[in-house]
Amino acid sequence: MVKICCLGAGYVGGPTMAIIALKCPAIEVVVVDISAARIAAWNSDQLPIYEPGLDEVVKSCRGKNLFFSSDVEKHVLEADIIFVSVNTPTKTRGLGAGKAADLTYWESAARMIADVSKSDKIVVEKSTVPVKTAEAIEKILTHNTKGINFQILSNPEFLAEGTAIQDLLNPDRVLIGGRQSPEGQKAVEALKAVYANWVPEDRIIATNLWSAELSKLAANAVLAQRISSVNAMSALCEATGADVTEVAYAVGKDSRIGPKFLNASVGFGGSCFQKDILNLIYICECNGLMEVANYWKGVIKINDYQKSRFVNRVVASMFNTVSGKKIAVLGFAFKKDTGDTRETPAIDVCKGLLGDKANISIYDPQVTEDQIQRDLSMNKFDWDHPPHLQPMSPSAIKQVSVVWDAYEATKDAHGVCILTEWDEFKTLDYQKIYDNMQKPAFIFDGRNIVDMEKLRKIGFIVYSIGKPLDPWVKDLPASA
Ligand code: NAD
Ligand code: UDX
Image 1 (tube, rainbow, N blue to C red):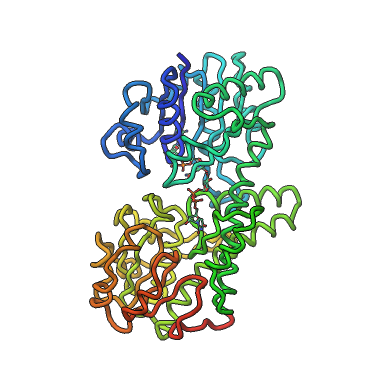
Image 2 (image 1 turned 45 degrees about the horizontal axis):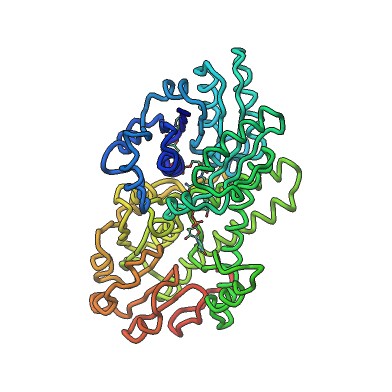
């Protein structure tokens, strides 16, 4: 029986290994983590992450060929293939702070593998890492002086949260990068054989190591660039009376462009896009490619602009002040169908509103009050000016309440901001919400999910990203 061990039981390690276990009954899969609490949750009825379809997969394999353990070293020792799926956040201090990937977790995982191993192993980079990381990892592993052969493969993960199970069951492609040597190619074949249990052969792409590492950063940069492009258009639509949904539809009908990832929004969030583009920018700068770095910086700058533009629109429309006014925030997760709040645009929007002294009442079906309070009390890390942290004052946190119902959040509110596109927000009883709000009642839809005409008929003043403006919605000063 082939034995797989995965270091890191997070959003990637957990679901990815659950699907490998489901599709490969002849393989034993053990997911390990340094966080005992996370492992305990994977072994309980309340999994540590919310992902549609995940519970069923885990329940069907756990205890058969899928195991979660905090005995990291034992399972590394026994494994033939080790996936490393640890976190690789942006560095917040020192050289490259604000942009470079922090590889502390990766390096300590590699050193532990080198120390513990007693037999040859394939080590698979599942985490998103800077191009050429495999070279550094190879140096750490091959200096073990024990005569053990390690083959490093790059096998980046392309799943998106909220659709992880579908993405894993039916991936557009599986990318495997390896050394061109016979041993390297043998390792590539071994990993291909795992995926071949359910992925058609023509979707399994083999490349050299550096192409695989860079393709992951490139894919995320291009996806985010599409969103920033449409978001940039949304500002122009608002200024001219064009409708961004119509523009995006017309643009996406071009078969060379395609319709996906052209939804204008309050900004993209999530743990990957910004981090991976910053990582790409840093690599470009290290290679002296300043123009290339600046090109990609533009994608993040438009994203920052979109979030502050939204806040300015709210404040300007509500007579230039939200001080002391209750604003309901519907949705805090960075997208629907996940409880993940990493880099969610809601953090920046809420902080912007709190900065203008609003009282905000937040409802999200999957995010806990603890998580929201933690997110809002954390210092905002300014990627462009790393030394300047923007602390949140404790009094601002008192202006936040978290409730478990959209009607409670909107009761007596002056305005509603929709920041996540949860399906349930489309079917709320907006008449009831209107009746219980202060007047004039404003709705600011950061995800373009409400029926503007219907809401206007009820009496709301409605702003929706990139849509023709309601006469009540105030233009922003040119500098905003
Ligand atoms: P995560 O923070 O949810 O999980 C990482 C886990 O690794 C944590 O539970 C942490 O305790 C554990 N860990 C850290 N060091 C360890 C060690 N030495 N040994 C064992 N466990 C250790 O992160 P994630 O969202 O799963 O992302 C993991 C990687 O995958 C990142 O590089 C990320 O960029 C990439 N990625 C993420 C997504 C996504 O949608 N979240 C998608 C594709 C790729
Ligand atoms: C992304 C990539 O899609 C995935 O391939 C990679 O492995 C990890 O990073 P994820 O961040 O989980 O996945 O979600 P994604 O669906 O890409 O959405 C990212 C952000 O962009 C969300 O905040 C989402 O709301 C926003 N978005 C997405 C838009 O604003 N408009 C769109 O058209 C699509």
